[in-house]
Length: 194
Image 1: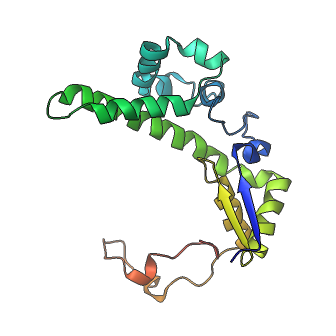
Image 2: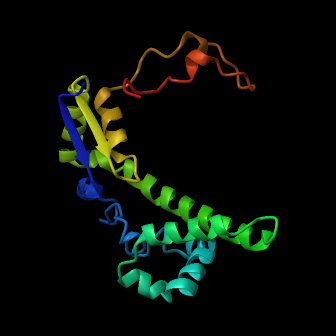
């Protein structure tokens, strides 16, 4: 049983910043962060997720400028979407069901893609790097519970653990052709902590 438990909320990752000095989003400022990002506010991304923006405009009467400048809670969006999906019967209204599922998929993909950007920047923060080391060094006595959507903390623990220099023997001598993955290869990680 763990002697020490860390319970971490979304604020823990606010010391991480990207090249544009943006921070990982909280549930209520996702669009404010993404719409300030040159990559994610580009015409390409806005076009790609336009069904999401259309859905928000339809149900919350908020356009892109509103989302850029005022808080909007992602939990409300995901909850409402899921309620509508659950109430829609695919056999009776496949078009509506498909449209809602597409919006949900686009939003989940957009969120995951934006969050993944910050995993690369987490190691820039001395505080976060040290925290990863503390958790890894005391891993036998520590339990970590996180309420974050991102995997920043996991990435920090991986890096603190160091590179795994002992891949499974079955990795050696593999060719480029498609081969079956063996059971001993499934848990392998390039880091000592997985």
